[in-house]
Image (cartoon, rainbow, N blue to C red; front, side, top):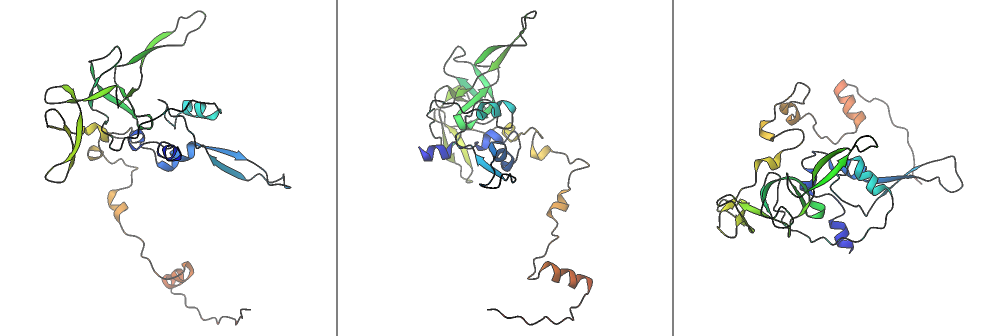
Length: 253
């Protein structure tokens, strides 16, 4: 149980890739902060950071307010068994076929990934009607919101050769590249380029430097040379200052 909680206690790699947020920010925003004075000294209020070990992951991402509301209140939730997946095979932009529900047999594009629950959200499929803005004098607006699908039983990757669902295997090419291969036709299913997209840019190769961005040459420029000197010794050498004072004798007891 402890191993499972460790594996699924944090966000998956592909769940947070599109948001392009640093790991330290995601870890900090999922922590709960308590203020507790030391015993006998109520005038001091040191900050004590306690991490929430049991997080409830849903379609709301940790950097949203909805995730904070779901995890802020201590609720007794039922244990949800999650099957560990060694090799994640679904990426943003993949074409998949739905195997269950009212949209069985339909195909769509993967829009979002929730790797902590083995979920993916397919654009326009497996939707649920939600009424927003309902008031006494206004019936509200009906919206269709996509619901998550379990990758182990609800969806299958589509083979681009015949546009039919298929199981896949991870193999290596002669050049040593790891690829997905269709079990039925033996053809390679390439990882879509859109999987590299983030909220900031479409593709790393197509990103155009802005006027306020740090230039690549400045980032790669070596401006520090390590020396076995203290900070004061380094400043004195650069400014040409020579130490003429004699240190006072001292003794260790």
